[in-house]
Length: 313
Ligand code: MTE
Image (cartoon, rainbow, N blue to C red; front, side):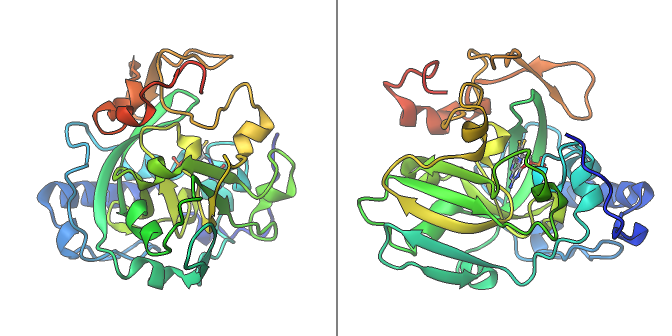
């Protein structure tokens, strides 16, 4: 489905390619020399603020080349702004992610609404370099900045009935032109089993390349679950619910035979309409093999012991 250009997007809101290219070079050098961690990056020609005091993480994937900042922020899936890869960067200029708060409810002792700053403040920001594998068979390597989801969730004291965690994206059709079409049931919803949510690899991301998330990347806060297909990594989260039963999710509702609840990256289980054996790394020419659990089997495979991964998709 095609979404028309909203007339209210100012050209000044669309960052030029040359700006991105010069920034990208700078950012890559900064990451390589470790400047990002010390908070010395200056915002300069960008419209996203620099994040300070970011520590490196032992969970980062260090052996692969990072995808360019330009690619990460111009080739996106964010159907709230349209279905084409270039729509999110083009049509998200009218979205306002500040101020922001998140409601936490359901099976926990300390439910409530919490401002973004208060949610983040008790935690130290970490750089987490992860592969991102989309179900559409493309992939990237993204230097996220975020905090472990499990540490955040523990503060709300989930009860023993909390078997799953459900996430909801903001619903603002005035600011998100894609939500005015019925390509998905809005708001976008996702979910994890509680042990998946508590796994140390799962993060809430607030930045990329040492800067706050841009709107098209899911500002101001999104999930990142690196061993699952990208659609589990829900953007612009406003609600987190502890629930007893497996929550319904947007893509599973829209095509249950194609998009399962678990959605672990699995080269041995093809999508009904295409193979999942290989992937195209954005910025590269040749396809590469897709890895079981997207290369994170050591950290996550034990959670699925005894489960038929070809059945639970
Ligand atoms: N979250 C919301 N709210 N809406 C979306 O359309 N798309 C998902 C996921 N999170 C999506 C979303 C899909 S299909 C992918 S592959 C990733 O976001 C893409 O993240 P990226 O655009 O930062 O690469």
